[in-house]
Image 1 (spheres, rainbow, N blue to C red):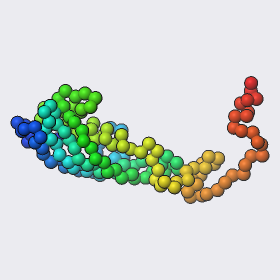
Image 2 (cartoon, rainbow, N blue to C red):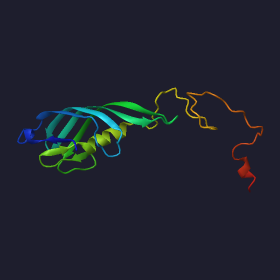
Image 3 (cartoon, rainbow, N blue to C red):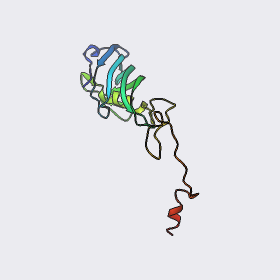
Image 4 (cartoon, one colour):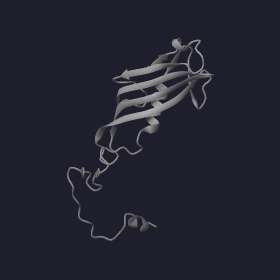
Length: 159
């Protein structure tokens, strides 16, 4: 669990801040088991009713290419600015007395910014739809079927 001690901000005026520096080689964030080398730098600032955590996050995550299914390491470099409150809602993460648990916020920041269709290379050719071989390693074509029927013509005959 990645936490921030709020004791240095106890009794401080609104706007007071403390530096935030976290480095974890293999963080254990829910839904992100292949995340590594997490580094977070920034500040924790006191607000009127809570805290603002802002900074940058750098890490690496192991993903699978959407075209060829090859695993690859995807670097992450993200900026964030999130609010914490003792009365959390949809826009603010929960703050406990004396500390902030950053895991839910970091998880959300990362998941929102992961690519929808990750690719190890923008020019990836993917897998052959006929035989399943990796077209990046073995470019090839298959002979076209002699029939002019489309893929759904056999279904039309069932009526």
